[in-house]
Length: 383
Length: 183
Image 1 (cartoon, rainbow over the protein chains, first blue to last red):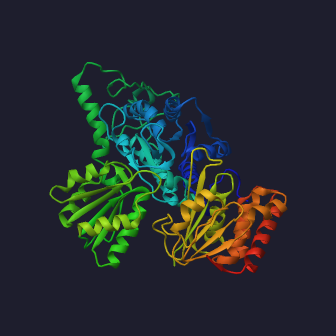
Image 2: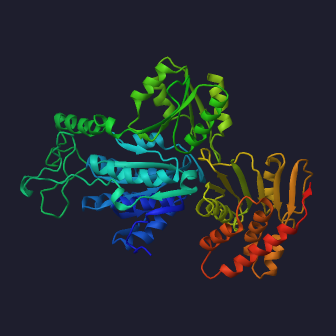
Image 3: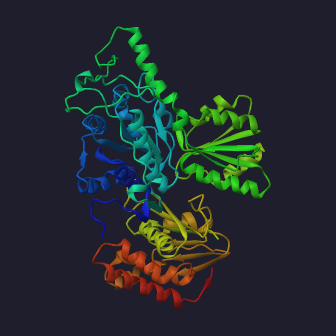
């Protein structure tokens, strides 16, 4: 028997929520604060058992606003921290996600998307929060959001979200959907020495010289831990490199907010991940993510059987958006098909880069994602 | 070969658990690829509920059931909703005591298993889903009985193994001896 403190290295038949929780543990997450909500509850439930086994902290807060605040506090105190929620809770978290952006606090927010707006359809899937993940808090910022489409990726991309959060000092988001979260599938957890774990950069200056918002060349400032004796002032107000408020300096605002956006934009080649299937000679490209990408893959394979040159660009990173690759695809293909479980969100990004190439949008809401045949029909119409 | 199986009934009958047991048996004990998805209402208990399993030797792209090869159905509501959608020539395994009103089906193998009654005789109505699994294994032969038994043991509360395995055996025997009936 493995000790209670060990990772569950090996093969499992597990659901996506539990895989996400184990991915967090594997990434080194040792603090979870949240409020239960379908279809993300199993993440909290599982971590309520697992966190204490690793000496970590699980806390159920009074709501999602407080949950997000607690996650920021834990991260400032040096722990890798996470919360998990669904649409209604994600809305409540937006203000403190903005605070995480402004104070450059690494953390992971898991949003298992269900049907919205408002309380919507709690037990049914959706992809309606993808723009909220990009623009949900006020002000200007850039951030990271990943879209798993299998139970394996619920594990792998949760771990990756922590790595990105720690690398760039940002709130990183994992945008799952109800199907991927509740789906049972094979998951293989690698041995600990095969996992790539990134920890935040630590300061290498004397404590009294430390400036918590002075970036290195990669635009990311090293991060000390509150309570270790480093000078450390953090605020949601626009601030200088010391962290002191600069509420009337245009220069400070220009410099800080530009850097907050650029630390993602200028590193996007390192961040962006896509999966390409049969795109080399494709006349029609399907761009899809999450559970819908599985249906799109089946559709593309069926199209090839019928002699239609179709291919799939699966977005693993939603934000930053892989705009260079989409622009190339638009030049190569006759049409791009974008199926989504919303009324048209990522398709706007595709259209922005497609220029003259026609983009066909396929919307589906409610219980089931698009069937492969529905996507195949749209491919055929555009081939 | 891709095989699609749909379990349907109402929340509380162990419908979702049935799907997990079968998919895990195929994946962990049967060396195949398998994926289980589910759908239930916010009321959970008493509401309509379904559990879908796809089993394949190859990678499974689309994880949902489009046209089931096998429908295992335990409520009238679910029967009405899904029975017309079974693949032509497909298999329907149903609990006739839960489904008083049947429709005429042209092209399906229908097997009637009084699972709820058998489970009541065993002393616990809640193992009716496991009786159905026994019949499912005997009728479809998609999976090895021992693989499913292992999977049952891993997916039920400790201390209920004897009752559940007995329920499985009774369903298996009933399914094995049942003459095939065209609807």
